[in-house]
Image (cartoon, rainbow, N blue to C red; front, side, top):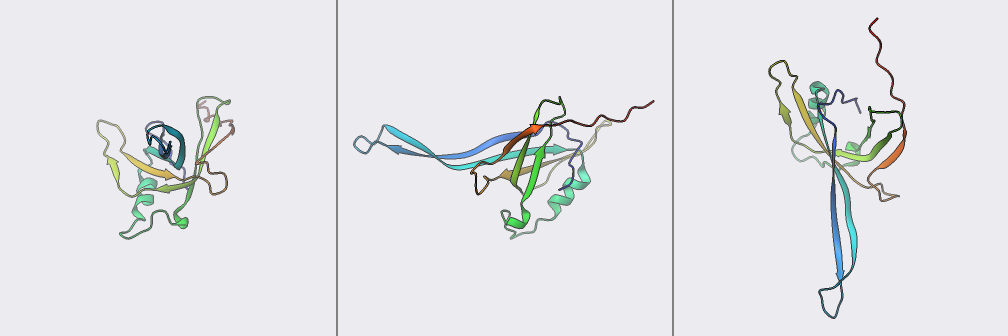
Length: 143
């Protein structure tokens, strides 16, 4: 997958979960347990890299299976604030169709919003891994 930077804003992660409640048989009202039956993450990335983002979205055609394994991508969010922050990786991310485009104006660049559904890993059941700290490279100096 291509580097989607520069981003307009930090990525947003939202839980996309479903629970199954098990109630007490006699009363039908007292919940005895609540089981996680769906454990996805919705990841929204707004990028100013319009060309690469639109190329990704242009691959969709009517009738496509958006959760086909050939469409699976791995997305790693790398913090840029400090060396001690950790990366977060979504190994089973699937881009959702639909163009979210905002044209730039007043010397502001255009941006594209990409929405991914990140499914849990088949072995661990977790939709992401929280990695080790990174050491971002410093931008070249302008001497």
